[in-house]
Image (tube, rainbow, N blue to C red; front, side, top):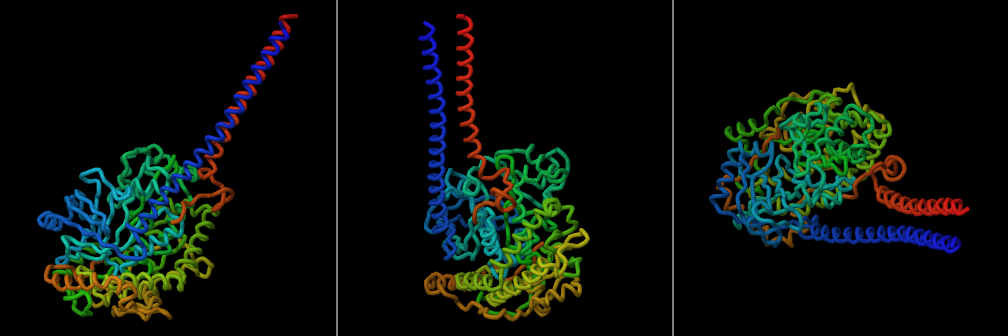
Length: 623
């Protein structure tokens, strides 16, 4: 009897052991299956993204965006632009037709500025595919049509997003578009995908986290500590249905009062974001006085800083680099004419009102940003900069990111070649733009100035990196962002705003930009666009647009300017900054699988041991 029972128990233990091992194998198979499913999903996303890149946001051509809307509704939208109210319309986006979309005006400073212009209705627009019915454009629910306000080159935002992609920042889709309203060419715009679910799914693999936007109209967008009451952070506007305010407070508390930044923040991505603002001299951002134009996305407790809104990059806000917005050249008759007409008094007053406090000069003796102190005002008031750069390891990584940008994409040869490529692609469209803020001559000057300013900025940054000149100061930051005028030519004939110091003048001279508003000589090898390749392929559109331009010159379109008031996500990999120290990286799923297997095996072994104890106890009782 005892022998039979002993044999039975051994068989039972063997069965349990086999079941346990089978469970491990099943778990491994499930893991492999899940991995295969993930790979299939990634492939599907890749195909979807490929379609977006080829048909919705192509980088090698300009697509047509044709809006059909009731004339009265459209005029009401223009007359009440500040209300930013949606109107119903139909849309053909590069041949893809939609009914019942929403369209409205959009913008902050650019919107207010155009509202105050007496000669322009060139607003930026937001297209909402799902405003009235449940529909999207390949998952995208909203697209912004940006009017290139204060950018005579038309390409500052385009190039900055392109650089952001190369730096590995999660970047929205973007491309140049020709906008038509009721079959009439309205203007040449930049289309930018709205940061929402499609963007989040593509870049993070989910969209269930909390999304916040840094806005200038509230408090807390500088990410300083205002206490545990989330209502104090009115400058961090919730843009998602999900709210994780407790985690937001934890992140802000750790950033300001702790040291374990990686617990709540994707540090490398944050450093890339800061570096992008610095190398493009974009003070209309977190580092500037407005402390705006960025998003925070919470992904499983860790926040990423997302890039947004770069029409003021390359010194467009006026501080550092002197590109400025300018005040345009006044109204003109055709976009292809060169004019010396000064602004009429009404238009000039409108633009001056739009400028706000633009007369304040840069408080520093130089208009360049200090790479380790790039803030408008005290660097301590921007904890994302101050706290991270106080860690030597992070500061070294940050310098490496900057160095890679200025020696790569922004290097003179590379940047000049890319600017020329873009100019050749868009030249004929700019020439035909019926509502442009600038003359065609000002556009060509703007392209040259863009190259010259980048050369000057890169040289200054390189000297800071090498230690030839200081990269930080006394903690007071890089001065007021509302410095020199510039790219738009200042008031009328090029008069500068503000009280520029001698250092500002030296920086301006270094950029080849005189006080008379004349363009600098282009760098060696630079040729100004003269129609550009690709004109033949679009000649039919251009001729038609030019005819429409001539017919529409009496309709109040703008001829003046106005002054303003890619890759995979980063991470610390598997061993040090840029390749390790990753508490929230890609190793987590494997660790979870191994833990599950260990628990299964452990449980099986425990059952075997308990069986042995039972056998021993049983034998004693029988004895």
